[in-house]
Length: 491
Image (cartoon, rainbow, N blue to C red; front, side, top):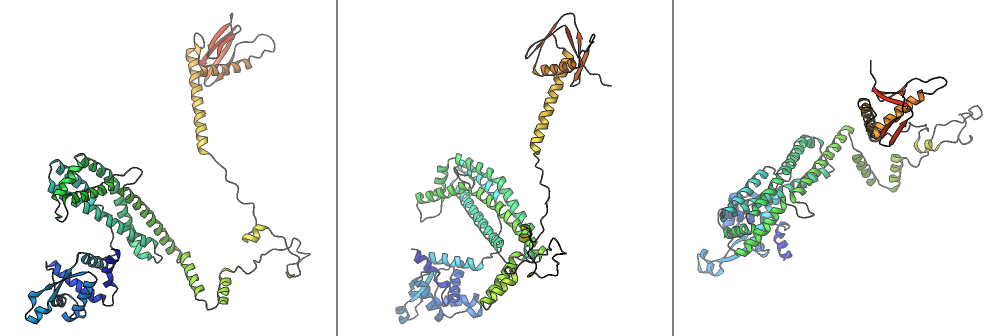
Protein backbone atom coordinates (compact mmCIF):
# COMPACT_ATOMS: atom_id res chain seq x y z
CA UNK A 1 0.00 0.00 0.00
CA UNK A 2 2.80 2.40 0.89
CA UNK A 3 4.76 1.58 -2.28
CA UNK A 4 1.66 2.24 -4.41
CA UNK A 5 1.23 5.68 -2.82
CA UNK A 6 4.89 6.59 -3.24
CA UNK A 7 4.68 5.60 -6.92
CA UNK A 8 2.36 8.58 -7.44
CA UNK A 9 5.31 10.94 -7.00
CA UNK A 10 7.54 9.19 -9.54
CA UNK A 11 6.87 11.92 -12.13
CA UNK A 12 8.72 14.48 -9.94
CA UNK A 13 12.05 12.69 -10.45
CA UNK A 14 11.55 11.51 -14.05
CA UNK A 15 13.60 12.91 -16.91
CA UNK A 16 10.58 14.72 -18.41
CA UNK A 17 9.24 15.96 -15.06
CA UNK A 18 8.58 19.43 -16.45
CA UNK A 19 6.43 18.02 -19.29
CA UNK A 20 4.52 15.75 -16.88
CA UNK A 21 3.85 18.71 -14.59
CA UNK A 22 2.39 20.84 -17.43
CA UNK A 23 0.14 17.99 -18.56
CA UNK A 24 -1.21 17.63 -15.03
CA UNK A 25 -1.69 21.40 -14.84
CA UNK A 26 -3.83 21.18 -17.96
CA UNK A 27 -6.05 18.64 -16.18
CA UNK A 28 -6.24 20.95 -13.16
CA UNK A 29 -7.28 23.89 -15.37
CA UNK A 30 -10.03 21.77 -16.96
CA UNK A 31 -11.16 20.60 -13.53
CA UNK A 32 -11.60 24.24 -12.45
CA UNK A 33 -13.96 24.65 -15.45
CA UNK A 34 -15.89 21.49 -14.45
CA UNK A 35 -14.45 19.44 -17.32
CA UNK A 36 -13.24 16.03 -16.15
CA UNK A 37 -12.37 13.92 -19.21
CA UNK A 38 -9.65 15.16 -21.58
CA UNK A 39 -8.15 13.90 -24.81
CA UNK A 40 -4.54 14.51 -25.90
CA UNK A 41 -5.68 17.11 -28.45
CA UNK A 42 -7.64 19.02 -25.83
CA UNK A 43 -4.64 19.01 -23.53
CA UNK A 44 -2.52 20.43 -26.34
CA UNK A 45 -5.08 23.23 -26.88
CA UNK A 46 -5.10 24.03 -23.17
CA UNK A 47 -1.29 24.21 -23.03
CA UNK A 48 -1.27 26.46 -26.11
CA UNK A 49 -3.34 28.98 -24.10
CA UNK A 50 -1.79 28.66 -20.65
CA UNK A 51 1.79 27.37 -20.91
CA UNK A 52 4.87 29.38 -21.94
CA UNK A 53 6.06 28.92 -25.51
CA UNK A 54 8.93 26.63 -24.46
CA UNK A 55 6.58 24.28 -22.57
CA UNK A 56 3.87 23.80 -25.21
CA UNK A 57 3.40 20.24 -26.47
CA UNK A 58 1.67 18.65 -29.46
CA UNK A 59 -0.94 15.89 -29.25
CA UNK A 60 1.60 13.34 -30.51
CA UNK A 61 4.05 14.30 -27.75
CA UNK A 62 1.32 14.26 -25.10
CA UNK A 63 0.13 10.71 -25.87
CA UNK A 64 3.15 8.84 -24.39
CA UNK A 65 3.13 11.16 -21.39
CA UNK A 66 -0.50 10.29 -20.67
CA UNK A 67 0.23 6.58 -20.89
CA UNK A 68 3.10 6.87 -18.45
CA UNK A 69 1.00 8.92 -16.00
CA UNK A 70 -1.67 6.22 -16.30
CA UNK A 71 0.90 3.54 -15.42
CA UNK A 72 1.87 5.54 -12.34
CA UNK A 73 -1.88 5.64 -11.45
CA UNK A 74 -2.12 9.44 -11.45
CA UNK A 75 -4.65 9.28 -14.30
CA UNK A 76 -7.51 6.96 -15.08
CA UNK A 77 -8.15 5.93 -18.70
CA UNK A 78 -11.39 5.08 -20.55
CA UNK A 79 -12.56 4.58 -24.14
CA UNK A 80 -14.41 7.26 -26.11
CA UNK A 81 -15.87 6.00 -29.40
CA UNK A 82 -17.85 9.16 -30.02
CA UNK A 83 -14.74 10.93 -31.33
CA UNK A 84 -14.28 8.51 -34.28
CA UNK A 85 -14.95 10.05 -37.71
CA UNK A 86 -14.24 6.86 -39.70
CA UNK A 87 -14.60 3.13 -39.16
CA UNK A 88 -10.83 2.76 -38.74
CA UNK A 89 -10.77 5.41 -36.01
CA UNK A 90 -13.68 3.70 -34.24
CA UNK A 91 -11.84 0.39 -34.28
CA UNK A 92 -8.71 2.03 -32.91
CA UNK A 93 -10.82 3.78 -30.26
CA UNK A 94 -9.64 7.05 -28.73
CA UNK A 95 -8.61 7.17 -25.08
CA UNK A 96 -9.73 9.93 -22.69
CA UNK A 97 -8.10 10.53 -19.28
CA UNK A 98 -9.04 12.01 -15.96
CA UNK A 99 -7.43 12.49 -12.56
CA UNK A 100 -7.57 9.57 -10.13
CA UNK A 101 -8.46 10.55 -6.59
CA UNK A 102 -4.99 9.75 -5.23
CA UNK A 103 -3.35 11.25 -8.32
CA UNK A 104 -5.07 14.59 -7.80
CA UNK A 105 -3.94 14.69 -4.15
CA UNK A 106 -0.36 13.92 -5.20
CA UNK A 107 -0.45 16.67 -7.84
CA UNK A 108 -1.87 19.21 -5.37
CA UNK A 109 0.80 18.29 -2.84
CA UNK A 110 3.53 18.97 -5.39
CA UNK A 111 1.89 22.23 -6.49
CA UNK A 112 1.54 23.37 -2.87
CA UNK A 113 5.25 22.76 -2.30
CA UNK A 114 6.23 24.55 -5.50
CA UNK A 115 3.99 27.53 -4.84
CA UNK A 116 4.49 27.85 -1.11
CA UNK A 117 6.10 30.97 0.33
CA UNK A 118 8.33 29.48 2.97
CA UNK A 119 9.12 32.86 4.51
CA UNK A 120 5.44 33.75 4.98
CA UNK A 121 4.52 32.54 8.46
CA UNK A 122 2.27 33.96 11.16
CA UNK A 123 0.17 32.95 14.17
CA UNK A 124 -3.60 33.28 13.84
CA UNK A 125 -4.60 34.97 17.09
CA UNK A 126 -7.65 36.73 15.60
CA UNK A 127 -9.57 33.44 15.23
CA UNK A 128 -9.80 32.94 19.02
CA UNK A 129 -12.80 35.27 19.54
CA UNK A 130 -14.46 33.70 16.49
CA UNK A 131 -13.99 30.25 18.01
CA UNK A 132 -15.61 31.43 21.25
CA UNK A 133 -18.60 32.88 19.38
CA UNK A 134 -19.00 29.69 17.33
CA UNK A 135 -18.96 27.60 20.53
CA UNK A 136 -21.83 29.61 22.02
CA UNK A 137 -23.80 29.39 18.75
CA UNK A 138 -23.17 25.63 18.63
CA UNK A 139 -24.60 25.19 22.12
CA UNK A 140 -27.66 27.26 21.17
CA UNK A 141 -28.14 25.25 17.95
CA UNK A 142 -28.04 21.99 19.91
CA UNK A 143 -30.67 23.31 22.33
CA UNK A 144 -32.86 24.18 19.35
CA UNK A 145 -32.13 20.79 17.68
CA UNK A 146 -31.04 22.52 14.46
CA UNK A 147 -28.99 19.78 12.73
CA UNK A 148 -27.96 21.81 9.70
CA UNK A 149 -26.68 24.66 11.84
CA UNK A 150 -24.83 22.20 14.10
CA UNK A 151 -23.14 20.64 11.06
CA UNK A 152 -22.07 24.05 9.72
CA UNK A 153 -20.68 25.21 13.07
CA UNK A 154 -18.82 21.95 13.70
CA UNK A 155 -17.32 22.06 10.21
CA UNK A 156 -16.20 25.63 10.72
CA UNK A 157 -14.70 24.89 14.14
CA UNK A 158 -12.83 21.86 12.80
CA UNK A 159 -11.40 23.71 9.80
CA UNK A 160 -10.48 26.77 11.88
CA UNK A 161 -8.60 24.76 14.49
CA UNK A 162 -6.85 22.71 11.79
CA UNK A 163 -5.72 25.89 10.04
CA UNK A 164 -4.59 27.38 13.37
CA UNK A 165 -2.51 24.29 14.19
CA UNK A 166 -1.03 24.20 10.68
CA UNK A 167 -0.08 27.87 10.73
CA UNK A 168 1.44 27.56 14.22
CA UNK A 169 3.50 24.52 13.21
CA UNK A 170 4.70 26.30 10.06
CA UNK A 171 5.52 29.47 12.03
CA UNK A 172 7.67 27.65 14.56
CA UNK A 173 9.35 25.63 11.82
CA UNK A 174 10.38 28.85 10.04
CA UNK A 175 11.39 30.41 13.35
CA UNK A 176 13.49 27.36 14.23
CA UNK A 177 15.31 27.59 10.90
CA UNK A 178 16.00 31.26 11.58
CA UNK A 179 17.35 30.60 15.09
CA UNK A 180 19.50 27.60 14.11
CA UNK A 181 21.01 29.08 10.97
CA UNK A 182 24.71 29.91 10.98
CA UNK A 183 24.41 32.53 8.26
CA UNK A 184 22.51 35.25 10.10
CA UNK A 185 21.99 38.54 8.32
CA UNK A 186 21.92 41.06 11.16
CA UNK A 187 20.28 43.81 9.13
CA UNK A 188 17.31 41.71 7.98
CA UNK A 189 16.76 40.27 11.46
CA UNK A 190 17.03 43.56 13.34
CA UNK A 191 14.49 45.18 11.01
CA UNK A 192 11.79 42.62 11.93
CA UNK A 193 12.74 41.72 15.52
CA UNK A 194 10.31 44.13 17.19
CA UNK A 195 7.38 43.05 15.03
CA UNK A 196 8.25 39.38 15.59
CA UNK A 197 8.44 39.66 19.37
CA UNK A 198 5.26 41.77 19.52
CA UNK A 199 3.42 39.26 17.33
CA UNK A 200 4.37 36.29 19.55
CA UNK A 201 3.65 38.13 22.80
CA UNK A 202 0.22 39.26 21.61
CA UNK A 203 -0.61 35.72 20.48
CA UNK A 204 0.51 34.26 23.83
CA UNK A 205 -1.50 36.89 25.72
CA UNK A 206 -4.66 36.26 23.68
CA UNK A 207 -4.26 32.49 23.98
CA UNK A 208 -3.89 32.80 27.76
CA UNK A 209 -6.99 34.99 27.96
CA UNK A 210 -9.26 32.96 25.67
CA UNK A 211 -8.23 29.38 26.60
CA UNK A 212 -10.22 29.30 29.90
CA UNK A 213 -13.23 30.89 28.19
CA UNK A 214 -13.12 28.31 25.39
CA UNK A 215 -12.81 25.48 27.93
CA UNK A 216 -15.95 26.80 29.68
CA UNK A 217 -17.74 27.09 26.34
CA UNK A 218 -16.88 23.45 25.52
CA UNK A 219 -18.32 22.41 28.89
CA UNK A 220 -21.52 24.34 28.06
CA UNK A 221 -21.78 22.58 24.68
CA UNK A 222 -21.28 19.17 26.27
CA UNK A 223 -23.92 19.95 28.91
CA UNK A 224 -26.51 20.31 26.13
CA UNK A 225 -25.97 16.65 25.13
CA UNK A 226 -22.89 15.73 23.15
CA UNK A 227 -24.29 12.42 21.86
CA UNK A 228 -27.37 14.18 20.43
CA UNK A 229 -25.10 16.84 18.89
CA UNK A 230 -22.93 14.21 17.15
CA UNK A 231 -25.99 12.36 15.88
CA UNK A 232 -27.60 15.51 14.46
CA UNK A 233 -24.35 16.54 12.77
CA UNK A 234 -23.98 13.07 11.23
CA UNK A 235 -27.55 13.17 9.85
CA UNK A 236 -26.96 16.60 8.25
CA UNK A 237 -23.52 15.59 6.92
CA UNK A 238 -23.44 15.67 3.10
CA UNK A 239 -20.89 12.87 2.56
CA UNK A 240 -23.16 10.45 0.70
CA UNK A 241 -20.56 7.68 0.41
CA UNK A 242 -20.52 7.21 4.21
CA UNK A 243 -23.43 5.85 6.22
CA UNK A 244 -24.75 7.63 9.31
CA UNK A 245 -22.77 5.45 11.75
CA UNK A 246 -19.48 6.16 9.97
CA UNK A 247 -20.22 9.90 9.91
CA UNK A 248 -21.09 9.83 13.63
CA UNK A 249 -17.82 8.04 14.45
CA UNK A 250 -15.90 10.60 12.39
CA UNK A 251 -17.57 13.58 14.08
CA UNK A 252 -17.10 12.01 17.51
CA UNK A 253 -13.36 11.72 16.86
CA UNK A 254 -13.24 15.32 15.57
CA UNK A 255 -15.05 16.62 18.65
CA UNK A 256 -12.65 14.72 20.93
CA UNK A 257 -9.72 16.36 19.16
CA UNK A 258 -11.40 19.77 19.32
CA UNK A 259 -12.10 19.36 23.04
CA UNK A 260 -8.51 18.26 23.72
CA UNK A 261 -7.33 21.56 22.26
CA UNK A 262 -8.56 23.49 25.31
CA UNK A 263 -9.50 20.87 27.93
CA UNK A 264 -6.55 18.92 29.33
CA UNK A 265 -6.82 15.27 30.34
CA UNK A 266 -5.38 13.93 33.58
CA UNK A 267 -1.59 14.35 33.88
CA UNK A 268 -1.47 15.87 30.38
CA UNK A 269 -1.34 19.32 28.84
CA UNK A 270 -3.96 20.59 26.43
CA UNK A 271 -2.92 21.63 22.95
CA UNK A 272 -3.45 25.29 23.83
CA UNK A 273 -1.09 24.93 26.82
CA UNK A 274 1.50 23.21 24.64
CA UNK A 275 1.18 26.00 22.10
CA UNK A 276 1.57 28.64 24.81
CA UNK A 277 4.69 26.95 26.18
CA UNK A 278 6.07 26.69 22.66
CA UNK A 279 5.44 30.40 22.16
CA UNK A 280 7.29 31.33 25.36
CA UNK A 281 10.22 29.09 24.36
CA UNK A 282 10.26 30.73 20.92
CA UNK A 283 10.36 34.20 22.51
CA UNK A 284 13.36 33.12 24.60
CA UNK A 285 15.05 31.71 21.48
CA UNK A 286 14.50 34.96 19.55
CA UNK A 287 15.92 36.99 22.43
CA UNK A 288 18.95 34.71 22.51
CA UNK A 289 19.37 35.15 18.76
CA UNK A 290 19.08 38.92 19.20
CA UNK A 291 21.86 38.82 21.79
CA UNK A 292 24.07 36.81 19.42
CA UNK A 293 23.44 39.21 16.56
CA UNK A 294 24.15 42.22 18.79
CA UNK A 295 27.39 40.74 20.06
CA UNK A 296 28.44 39.89 16.53
CA UNK A 297 27.81 43.45 15.35
CA UNK A 298 29.62 44.91 18.35
CA UNK A 299 32.71 42.73 17.96
CA UNK A 300 32.93 42.80 14.16
CA UNK A 301 33.41 39.03 13.96
CA UNK A 302 32.28 36.32 16.32
CA UNK A 303 34.31 33.56 17.91
CA UNK A 304 32.27 31.09 15.90
CA UNK A 305 33.18 32.67 12.56
CA UNK A 306 36.86 32.83 13.57
CA UNK A 307 36.96 29.13 14.40
CA UNK A 308 35.08 28.33 11.18
CA UNK A 309 37.66 30.20 9.09
CA UNK A 310 40.50 28.52 11.00
CA UNK A 311 38.96 25.11 10.31
CA UNK A 312 38.85 26.02 6.62
CA UNK A 313 42.54 26.88 6.69
CA UNK A 314 43.36 23.54 8.29
CA UNK A 315 41.32 21.61 5.70
CA UNK A 316 43.05 23.46 2.82
CA UNK A 317 46.64 22.85 3.97
CA UNK A 318 48.51 20.86 1.28
CA UNK A 319 50.59 18.68 3.62
CA UNK A 320 50.57 17.43 7.18
CA UNK A 321 53.69 19.47 7.98
CA UNK A 322 51.87 22.60 6.84
CA UNK A 323 49.00 21.76 9.19
CA UNK A 324 51.45 21.35 12.09
CA UNK A 325 53.12 24.67 11.21
CA UNK A 326 49.71 26.38 11.15
CA UNK A 327 48.86 24.84 14.51
CA UNK A 328 52.08 26.11 16.12
CA UNK A 329 51.60 29.55 14.57
CA UNK A 330 48.03 29.86 15.84
CA UNK A 331 48.22 28.29 19.29
CA UNK A 332 51.97 28.39 20.05
CA UNK A 333 51.75 25.53 22.52
CA UNK A 334 55.15 24.07 21.55
CA UNK A 335 57.23 27.09 22.56
CA UNK A 336 58.55 27.72 26.09
CA UNK A 337 56.92 30.50 28.06
CA UNK A 338 59.62 33.06 28.97
CA UNK A 339 59.26 34.90 32.24
CA UNK A 340 60.97 38.15 33.16
CA UNK A 341 62.60 37.34 36.50
CA UNK A 342 65.93 38.33 38.15
CA UNK A 343 67.99 36.65 40.84
CA UNK A 344 67.64 37.95 44.39
CA UNK A 345 71.24 39.22 44.40
CA UNK A 346 71.86 40.99 41.09
CA UNK A 347 75.50 41.81 42.04
CA UNK A 348 76.48 38.12 42.28
CA UNK A 349 74.51 36.98 39.23
CA UNK A 350 73.99 39.92 36.82
CA UNK A 351 71.17 40.00 34.29
CA UNK A 352 73.69 40.03 31.41
CA UNK A 353 74.64 36.39 32.09
CA UNK A 354 73.00 33.89 29.73
CA UNK A 355 70.44 31.35 30.83
CA UNK A 356 72.85 28.52 30.11
CA UNK A 357 75.37 29.88 32.63
CA UNK A 358 73.09 31.35 35.31
CA UNK A 359 71.52 29.08 37.95
CA UNK A 360 67.73 28.64 37.82
CA UNK A 361 65.42 31.04 39.61
CA UNK A 362 62.59 29.79 41.76
CA UNK A 363 59.25 31.09 40.54
CA UNK A 364 55.75 30.74 41.90
CA UNK A 365 53.26 28.36 40.41
CA UNK A 366 50.84 31.21 39.71
CA UNK A 367 53.41 32.98 37.55
CA UNK A 368 54.23 29.79 35.61
CA UNK A 369 50.61 28.87 34.91
CA UNK A 370 49.03 32.28 34.32
CA UNK A 371 51.93 34.63 33.57
CA UNK A 372 50.89 36.94 36.42
CA UNK A 373 52.82 37.58 39.61
CA UNK A 374 51.11 36.30 42.78
CA UNK A 375 49.26 38.85 44.90
CA UNK A 376 47.41 38.66 48.19
CA UNK A 377 44.17 38.99 46.25
CA UNK A 378 41.10 40.93 47.08
CA UNK A 379 39.63 40.66 50.58
CA UNK A 380 37.14 37.90 51.08
CA UNK A 381 33.55 38.86 50.69
CA UNK A 382 31.73 39.42 53.96
CA UNK A 383 28.86 37.01 54.18
CA UNK A 384 25.78 38.94 55.22
CA UNK A 385 22.54 37.26 56.01
CA UNK A 386 20.20 40.20 55.62
CA UNK A 387 17.13 38.07 56.16
CA UNK A 388 18.28 36.75 59.52
CA UNK A 389 19.43 40.20 60.61
CA UNK A 390 16.05 41.65 59.72
CA UNK A 391 14.20 38.89 61.57
CA UNK A 392 16.37 39.33 64.70
CA UNK A 393 15.84 43.09 64.60
CA UNK A 394 12.07 42.64 64.36
CA UNK A 395 12.20 40.16 67.27
CA UNK A 396 14.15 42.68 69.38
CA UNK A 397 11.72 45.48 68.58
CA UNK A 398 8.77 43.24 69.46
CA UNK A 399 10.38 42.34 72.81
CA UNK A 400 11.11 46.01 73.49
CA UNK A 401 7.51 47.03 72.72
CA UNK A 402 6.19 44.25 74.94
CA UNK A 403 8.51 45.35 77.81
CA UNK A 404 7.46 49.00 77.43
CA UNK A 405 3.77 48.03 77.51
CA UNK A 406 4.32 45.97 80.69
CA UNK A 407 6.21 48.88 82.33
CA UNK A 408 3.40 51.33 81.55
CA UNK A 409 0.88 48.84 82.94
CA UNK A 410 2.84 48.73 86.23
CA UNK A 411 2.90 52.53 86.36
CA UNK A 412 -0.80 52.96 85.66
CA UNK A 413 -2.25 50.06 87.67
CA UNK A 414 0.28 49.56 90.44
CA UNK A 415 1.75 46.32 91.78
CA UNK A 416 -0.65 45.51 94.64
CA UNK A 417 -4.18 44.08 94.72
CA UNK A 418 -3.68 42.10 91.51
CA UNK A 419 -1.55 39.34 89.95
CA UNK A 420 1.22 40.49 87.64
CA UNK A 421 1.69 38.64 84.36
CA UNK A 422 5.03 37.30 83.12
CA UNK A 423 6.11 40.49 81.30
CA UNK A 424 5.15 42.70 84.25
CA UNK A 425 6.97 40.37 86.63
CA UNK A 426 10.13 40.57 84.50
CA UNK A 427 10.04 44.39 84.48
CA UNK A 428 9.33 44.54 88.23
CA UNK A 429 12.28 42.29 89.06
CA UNK A 430 14.54 44.39 86.86
CA UNK A 431 13.40 47.61 88.57
CA UNK A 432 13.74 46.00 91.99
CA UNK A 433 17.25 44.82 91.20
CA UNK A 434 18.31 48.36 90.20
CA UNK A 435 16.73 49.85 93.33
CA UNK A 436 18.28 47.30 95.70
CA UNK A 437 21.68 47.82 94.11
CA UNK A 438 21.43 51.51 94.91
CA UNK A 439 20.21 50.70 98.46
CA UNK A 440 23.56 49.28 99.66
CA UNK A 441 23.98 50.43 103.29
CA UNK A 442 27.42 51.35 104.56
CA UNK A 443 26.43 52.92 107.91
CA UNK A 444 23.49 54.72 109.40
CA UNK A 445 19.96 54.75 108.02
CA UNK A 446 19.09 54.21 104.32
CA UNK A 447 16.45 56.44 102.81
CA UNK A 448 14.17 55.57 99.93
CA UNK A 449 15.91 54.39 96.73
CA UNK A 450 14.79 54.26 93.14
CA UNK A 451 15.45 52.27 89.97
CA UNK A 452 14.29 53.05 86.44
CA UNK A 453 13.78 50.96 83.29
CA UNK A 454 11.67 51.11 80.12
CA UNK A 455 10.38 54.61 80.87
CA UNK A 456 9.16 53.95 84.46
CA UNK A 457 10.69 54.46 87.92
CA UNK A 458 10.33 52.23 90.98
CA UNK A 459 10.62 53.83 94.39
CA UNK A 460 11.58 51.51 97.27
CA UNK A 461 10.76 53.01 100.70
CA UNK A 462 10.50 51.78 104.33
CA UNK A 463 7.18 50.51 105.64
CA UNK A 464 5.85 49.67 109.09
CA UNK A 465 4.68 46.28 107.86
CA UNK A 466 5.80 43.79 105.26
CA UNK A 467 4.11 43.82 101.84
CA UNK A 468 3.33 41.03 99.37
CA UNK A 469 3.17 41.27 95.55
CA UNK A 470 1.27 38.56 93.61
CA UNK A 471 3.17 37.59 90.42
CA UNK A 472 2.87 34.91 87.72
CA UNK A 473 5.88 33.19 89.33
CA UNK A 474 4.50 33.25 92.87
CA UNK A 475 4.38 35.60 95.87
CA UNK A 476 7.08 38.26 96.37
CA UNK A 477 7.49 39.09 100.14
CA UNK A 478 9.10 42.45 100.96
CA UNK A 479 10.37 42.80 104.53
CA UNK A 480 9.04 46.19 105.80
CA UNK A 481 9.40 47.71 102.32
CA UNK A 482 6.86 49.54 100.14
CA UNK A 483 6.94 49.62 96.29
CA UNK A 484 5.67 52.43 94.09
CA UNK A 485 5.97 52.48 90.29
CA UNK A 486 5.47 55.71 88.37
CA UNK A 487 6.11 56.87 84.82
CA UNK A 488 9.26 58.93 84.30
CA UNK A 489 8.36 62.52 83.58
CA UNK A 490 10.40 63.79 80.63
CA UNK A 491 11.32 67.48 80.39
